[in-house]
Length: 370
Image 1 (cartoon, rainbow, N blue to C red):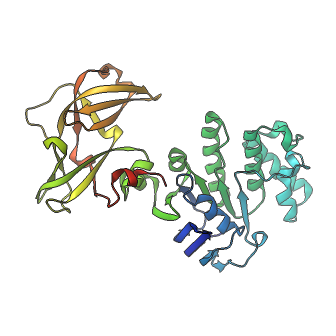
Image 2 (cartoon, helix red, strand yellow):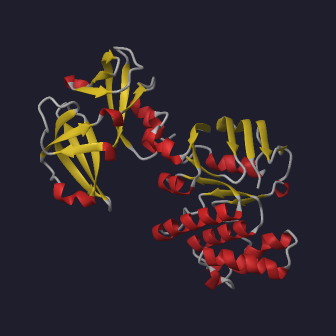
Image 3 (tube, rainbow, N blue to C red):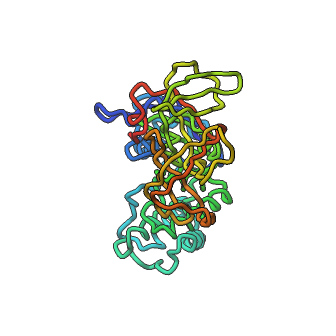
């Protein structure tokens, strides 16, 4: 199956730069998820690789071959667009079998392959239906089935599960990854759903404003985000603004507003430097009493709103200095539930706190999706 390499690729539309000097490598047989907000350049990136668009600058290589001037049909790719692009005059099984037949498979073999893909996407019962007789979610599944049956080595999937209901989306994400890995496809899967990306991807490339912010395995993206934007976009976090007040060999102290001090293990910043602290909501602990007097990073606060999130409950807590943090607590710990208005302590373990230099444009601008 093909590998893909993009070297300094740029694509502009008038004054807007959709893909900006982008470098990216996808290994043979890899399942890469490109994760980013709307308008970050995800679809443009797929269209460049598919050959639907040509780069203004840079080179695109597929399986070691420069393909800038190779048309889409010569790239051994199957592109699944958000708009489905189905053949309206062909029924479901005919749409699905089009790819293998065009690659000189026998009609019998093409229909056997297509039948398996329709079973996987739960469309076998609608094999004789036409696209205009299907719901939007069914049309999306048909577009996916057609790509999987095509025999192309490189799958380019643009929000392939976006129009499906929540239960089916979860079911198909596992089946899709399993099929891609079992058949040895190389897949590039675009999504704005961070949970989907972490489940199906071997690696995640986080895209913002046409540039790759970080590309790594899901564990690293989640636990070692390189920027405030990634920490916020992938999983969400609490952010606290302050400055380094003391630095020692084993850690530093950060002064927040109203003289609240936080201990961190980071030693790479100098006293006086402004920083932003980030801590995941599920690592922001709520306790009802202090274990010992003078415990580090234990702050009094008052519970505000509570939100039920299925397996978690999210609590909003206003600290005594005025900062607000959220804590996600597993429902399984319901015996320790707290109520709105209750006075509690918030514990922030130093090893769970990430530290970033305060952004020049301000914290809220750095948190913006685009």
